Length: 120
Image (cartoon, rainbow, N blue to C red; front, side, top):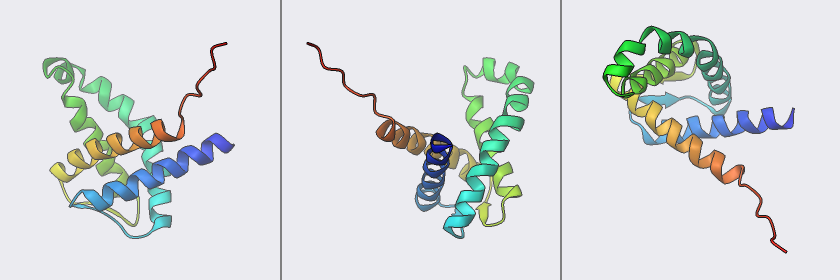
């Protein structure tokens, strides 16, 4: 239960930072960001794998760059289903997805630091 709450908190903070950095992505409040983090997780778990499989030929032709578009679609869907999260269009969604993944990776690396082992 603790790791779920920590992951949820990290996703919420990542969304807040993304909304602060990317013009065109807005979050009304911290509770809206928390709800958006849950909905984005559900979209990434349910819709994103289907989109990835359906767009596999484009992903292969673009050498994986089309996955940025799939991530943008996922962020747009989360914005559509979440009251309080607004994504203004295609480019803010794609740029927001890139920034969101970078911020989330940074926070995750900072929080989940591997413990240094002592060599005796």
